[in-house]
Image: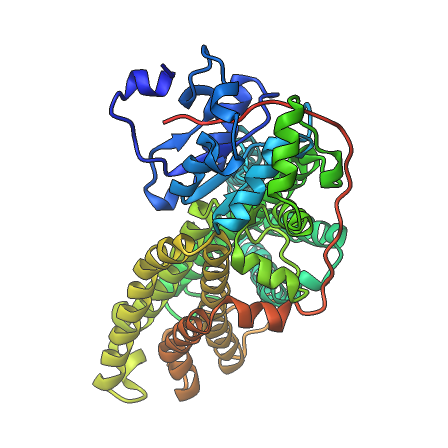
Length: 505
C-alpha cells in the first residue's frame, strides 16, 4: 500500500500532477512544490509518485504495458495542472519518463508550471535593503535636519526644493515606466535587467528623499507648494507611496526573472535524443508512444523554460513570434496588491479634491453637479480597486499568462489614471500662482480650471474603461501589437538523469 492510500484509504481526486526526476532532496522538492503551486485555483490534492505509488512493491508490474495505461498517465488525465520540478543535480528531461509526461501534458492540454515564484527569504532580504533601510535612513536624516538650528523659512525652502526635485523626477519615471513596459519585449534581456535596476535605484533614492522631507513638510505650516491643505499632505504621501509600490513591483519582477533563469538552467535541456530510461523495455515503449511528436514536445519544453509555464495560449503566442519571457510566472499576490493600492490612491485623490476640500473648489465649474460627478468618479475608482483581485483570480484560472496580462493592464492604467491628473493640477497651480522654484508664497484659494476638473473627475474613469476594453479584447491582440517580431532564444544544456515519477495527495 502507498503512503497516500494509507492516509486516505478511499483515495482523493488528483488535481495537480508533479513531474520530477527523483534527484532532488525532500526539502528541495517541498520548496519547489510550494513555490509552483497555483494559489488562485483552490486546488488541494496532488499526485506525487513518491507517495502515491506503492514503492515497497515491484513497480515493474505497474509499468509493464502501454505507457498510456500507467498510473502516471491516468493521474495526469484527472489533473488540471502539472508542476515541473527542476533540480540542481540533473536535467529532468534527460529522463525519458519525464519526457513522456511532457508529451502527455501537451496532448491532454494541461497547464504546466515551473517554480518561478521567488523564495520568501529572498523577498524579505530585498524588501529590507530597498524599502525598510532607505525609509529608516530618510527618517534619521529628516530628524537631524529638523534639529539643525535653521530659520523656518530656510528649512521650508530646503524641504520644498527637495520635494520639488523628487516630485518632478517621479513624474519623469512615471512617464518612462509604462512606455518601457509596452516595448519591454523588444529589448535584449540583459538590457531589460539593467534598465529595471537603474529605475529601481532611482525610486529608492526618491523614497529616501521623500521620507527625509516628511518631518519639515508636516511640521511647518502649509499649503505653500500645493493647491490645498489636504493636498499639502496627500501629495507628499501619495508620491512617497507611489515610489514604494514601484520599488516593490520592480523587486518582484527582478526576483521572478532571476528565479526563472535559474530553474530554466536546471532543466538543462538540449534534445529529446539525450533522454534515457533505466529499463530498456520502457524506453522502447515510450519512444514508440511519442513517435512523430518529438518536435512538439521539444517546443513545449522550450516554452516552459522561456515563460515559466506552458499552455495552448502561450504556444500560439510563441508560434506567432511573440516574446513570452516571464509571461507564465504564477505568483500574482504582490502585483495584485500593487494594482489595487494604485486604484485606491486614484479614488483617494479624487475624494480629497471634490469632497474634503472647500466647496469653492468644486463649485467654480459646474456647481453641485461637479461634486456629484466627483463622487461618481470616487465610486468607480473604488469599485475598480475591488474588482482588480477578482479579475486576477478569474483570468489566472484561464492560464498563468492571462493573469499576468490582466494585472499588467491594471497597473499601467492605474499609473496613468493617478499621475496625469495630478501632474496637470499641480502644474496649473504653479503657473497660475506664479510660483517658481524656491519662491513659495502662501496661497489661500485655488480653483482648478474646467479642463483640469474634467481630468481629475473623468480621466481615471476613461482609463478604467480602456483597461476593461483591453482585457476583453484579450491577450493575443496585446501580444501581437507589443511583442511582434521578438525572437525566441534557444536554451542550451547537457547532463543526464534517470528516475521514477512523483506524486502525493
